[in-house]
Image 1 (cartoon, rainbow, N blue to C red):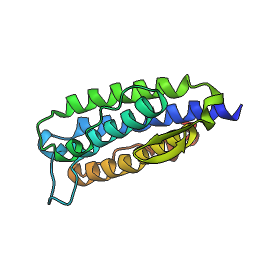
Image 2: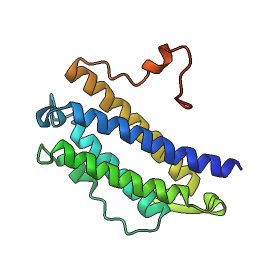
Image 3: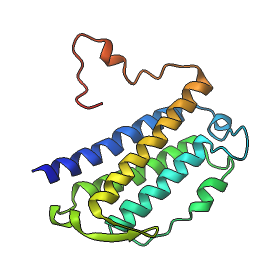
Image 4: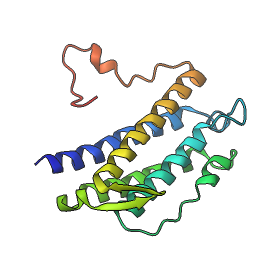
Length: 169
């Protein structure tokens, strides 16, 4: 069924992207995680907190029915007071919970309407929004990590092999 494929792939994609962010956090010092060139930029740490808040609000609360405890302004106000390992653990817990909610969502609920942040969306649209939003910020974090470390992170090196085992990009 296409509905199950959508749910399974959405949960998989969040976990895959979370793993890449966690890899980036492991490569960066605390100073690099919280570095900003100016107040108009977000640090890697801010982006991780923002993703945790977004996923928790849209999936945990909006799709899963948990209370909405998000403090969005705090995600961007943080300035270096959280270790990379703590950010990684928070992201891991947030994504694991969201992936579970997504994987176990009854197909019939995908067309159910909810309101999140003033947006009236279906549960399918909420899930799609979260995966797309998570992907955009993962790209920013990967770019920042490459810029700060000068390293090739190797996420696509398998494409240079005669036959690669990764099944989705």
